[in-house]
Length: 140
Image (tube, rainbow, N blue to C red; front, side):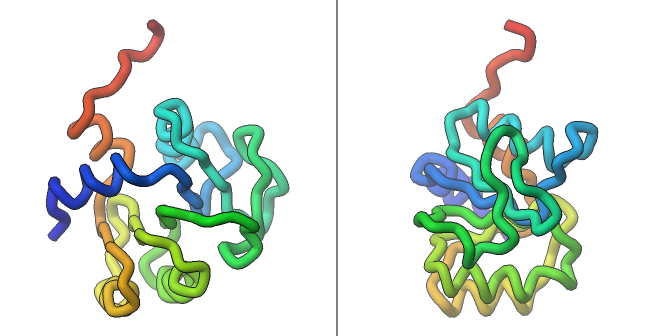
């Protein structure tokens, strides 16, 4: 279970978000979610081996290729694809693994927690931000 307090603390302290599985297609949900976070001031690092740039940001093939510190590893992958992402998140010393809505992998989550990372599962980062902090109305 994700605590509101924990999600709020993560959203307040995080500056850099590595979005694993972010699509370069603006029609995809992941694109809209990450665009919102970028608009809120988070530094976004796309992680997609099939892209060189997404949203004007350099894309990396994997977490290990990112040359800077990452606060949150945001996961847009199927639950069965989460374990190697968690392994990389641990390796790069990320602080948080955030699995988007519909993504649950208890085993990977426990491994991340055991390594000292915070874990959020089955929760949309955009929805949590809007709920906890309010959103700027679109079109203003």
